[in-house]
Image (cartoon, rainbow, N blue to C red):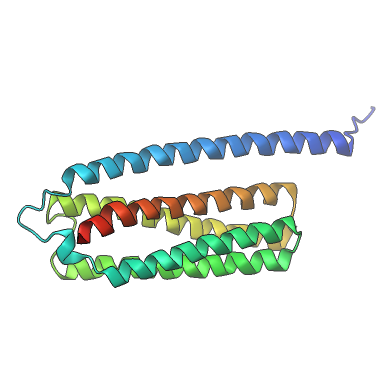
Length: 201
């Protein structure tokens, strides 16, 4: 029986087609996330004044906290970009190093956010206190969940990189992760503006 031998060129072309389809799927995911956050932002804007006699953003939000959070997340976006540059330079160690730094910064961001939530709850400002706080916890919490998923995704990428190195598949995954992380950064800028800065004004 004659064996069907696939040339390396055909195999590479097939792999590239698969990666292109997966990248298209990733963009659809990002679009769905834009719709999700757009809906949550719209809900927050409608409900921000419905405090039910409870505390307002001006009474709850501390400028120092969200300024530090913003600096950390913006820095993590920068380090994820450095990771992508190291990938294009085919520097595996540099790529992994900057991904680890991104994870650490993302973890620090989450720590501050969780601490903020616990402080608010301790002060009696929880998700059931008012419509404003319900919208706040859901909106900011959804972003926090996305950051958490991004951290686990990044950990998985590091494991794959250590096992397989920089390949066509891992390049696509790193590129998509970088886009995802920058997307979370953009969402945070909107959160900073709409929720925190407008809240303290």
